[in-house]
Length: 358
Image 1 (cartoon, one colour):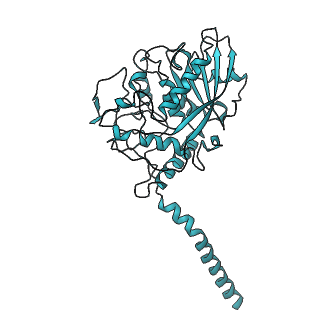
Image 2 (image 1 turned 30 degrees about the vertical axis):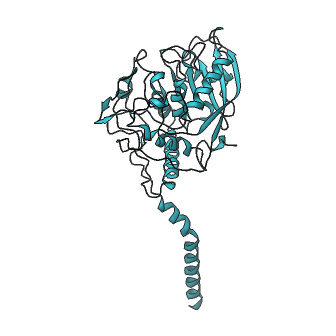
């Protein structure tokens, strides 16, 4: 009987001891409440088709349509994207202990001061794959350099258009503090006249399924996509073998084959935003569907061309100049602080893009 009592007492002490040892972790976790109730990955087919055929009006980004297809092909992708989103929201919430940690956008576009994430300037090495069917499509090094320059200006809020941001949104402007460096250019002749959006350009570039160091570089593929499609990107959490961004030859950089009104290099800025986990500014749905960013206004559809200001939907003024809308290159010129936080969170410990950091 004494042995039984002693054993029970010993177990109780061990249990209390373990509880004390584990409690800091539990408490730390509980301090950051993460609400994922609004999270979604699939977008409504009706919403996508409503923007189809807009090649002469908007940028013809097929990222969400490609995502829908990949979700159908890969049942595990939704869970991976959920995990990526959870990490992003938890990290941001840990830097804002006085605010809820769900990362949801309130729809009002209220200014949100940036947080100090202690990551400093993030540098992303880039590999550009040029797929060409003729000499014109074999774009010059100068054109490639022009695209890298645009990315560096746009992701540091130093572009020449930043002073055009209306006063309503001036406090929202976010310096993402990400820089891009060109690591190398890989050129390959192809018999294809267009590639579509099924990642054929990526496989053709490598002659197989391997991407060059996807865990440490941003891979960009440049070629003729066809169908009036400007580009598409892969969200974090997807297949490493196809990770990166695709942009059409006519919409890459600011010189050479770059064609107005998409000759400002902003198609790549838009698609890299997707690669860094940003959704379209209107949330790819109606007024109640969100882009998971608190300081962007609610909207229910993309904007095209160069809309007048203010443009109002969902009882709020659209942030049409945001890089994640569909307006012409010269009329988009800002990310927000909230968008910056989402992108940078990917590089924190445990983040989906952490391995890119040296």
